[in-house]
Length: 235
Image 1 (cartoon, rainbow, N blue to C red):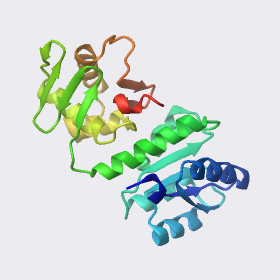
Image 2: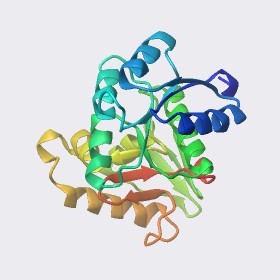
Image 3: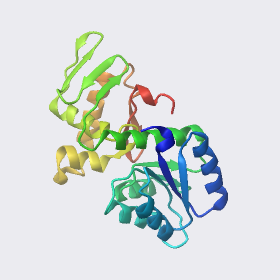
C-alpha cells in the first residue's frame, strides 16, 4: 500500500492543531479526515475505517481513553495519542487502554511522522507475522529463532526471543512493561519488573554496540520499552 492510499483520522478538539496536522500529513501524501469530539471520532472511525488514528486525550465530550477503549472493542487499528499530559501514569493509562504510541505536545514534525510510519508498518505486517530484524550488524530470524552477527552465531535464550517477539510485533512503538510481563511471563508475573530488566540487559549485552547507550532496545522511562530497528533511524 502506498502512502497516498493511507487514511489518517485526526481526533482533536482544537481547530488550529487539526489544521496543522492536516497540512503536515497531506504534505506526506496521506489522506486526512477530522473529528472534533470523541463521539464524532468513533462515528468517523466506523464509517471510513481509517488506517491509523491520531487521538487527543482532552476531548470536550469524553476522555480520549474511553474513546480508545471503545475503538479497541471492535478494531485493531493503530492508535497514536497526541497529548499535553506528561505524567508517566497518564502515558501508561493510555497505552494500557489500547493506544500503540504516545507523543507529547509540543511535538516535532519529524517525530510525529516517524510514529505514524511505525504504526502503519506494524499494521501492514499483520498480527501473526514475525519479521526478520536487522539491529546494526546483527540479523535475527524470529520465526526460526536464529541470530548472527559479525562474529558468527549469537545465542539468545528462549525467554529473550519471546521478549523480542513481543517488541517486534509493535516495532517502533512503545510496549509497556506490564504488557511484556503479561505476554512473556504470564498474568501472574505482571509485577515482576526485575525479571524483565534482567532479560532486557541480557539482550542489550548481546545486541547493542554499547549496552550502556542502547540504540535499538530503548527504555521509555516509567512506561516500558521500544524496539528501534535500523529503518527507524530517521526518528
